[in-house]
Length: 425
Ligand code: AMP
Ligand code: GLY
Image (tube, rainbow, N blue to C red; front, side):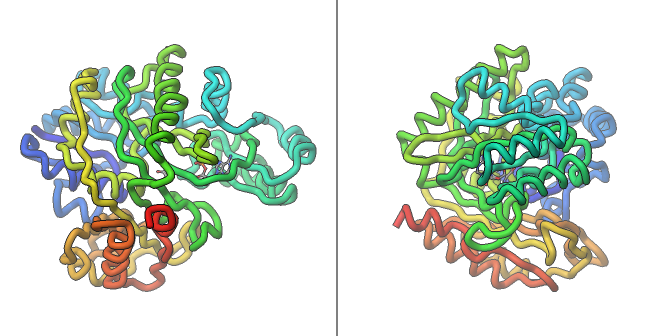
């Protein structure tokens, strides 16, 4: 089989790494890929959002299955384009991807179908949003309606911060048209978890639980990023919490999408806040998480390909997934300045020494090859991922690898997995 992975981040490197182990795949392609992916797959010089050109490429190169990593091509309708040409593709179609593409849609869906979430209001006008914020007070969360690379949710501790957030999103349009509408929603406290499942529109097959670290600095300080690290499993998701997430969030959401005439296939990712054993949904994503995919795919013992095919062919009920019992931790190393402006082209050293460590995989995100050297080319640069016999061991292994890697300005959180440690110990 010939398989194409669309995207260029750590998640896509993890997908390529996992699919590389699949005995039925003879040739792997990625578009556009990165320096790490290029060691495992043939990279095509096509952007992840060049939907038509990607379909042309898949048709011409006889690709049997395309796997979509990022959200933007999903919301642009890559799945619809491929399917209209009879090309097999794994991912949510455009009507289903609205679950990630519009927070207004999703909050309304959750309200209509009684899926647990915080209270909220939608605003189209700055003055209305500001008046509401002054009425309800802080803490409060302000979110741009559309896609904003994981940065469009602003958690505000004071009314002033919330009013500023409205200005940034609706007036300054820092996130472009994504800020045409805003959702102002209840601040939920508790512990976060990411819950990902495969679904073919009927069967919902959960993956292992995981936890992201969204804030840029230790102790969840600083602005939100796309994710600075993740670990799996997330001990906050006990068996009982798992059952509630499936019964109250995942299955009802898949059913709700079907009832709305938007049948959902692909990966359904719920970002959850868990308090007192009760889950509430913060958001949904229509794809694998990044960096959650890195620890999850390292822990996945089963072949990934049959699962993806079963989703595409709508026979997911036939499939089961085995997970390695060992936990995995992924530490993201980022460019200096990320999530703000950052320089590119810094030479990265120590990659081979890190990758030689046992049970460590260094997934590339924003990397490129320049003059035979691996250089930085984005905000999140690497996802250094390790398996361990327990959480402390996985953390220690991941950081041992991180310490071998260097470039000018590199930064990373030093507390990835610590929350899991408290519970698991
Ligand atoms: P989102 O883009 O909706 O996932 O939000 C990004 C991050 O902001 C989440 O992972 C949470 O850490 C935080 N967040 C979002 N919504 C809320 C909320 N209602 N209450 C508290 N924190 C939130
Ligand atoms: N790690 C958060 C996300 O993938 O959206």
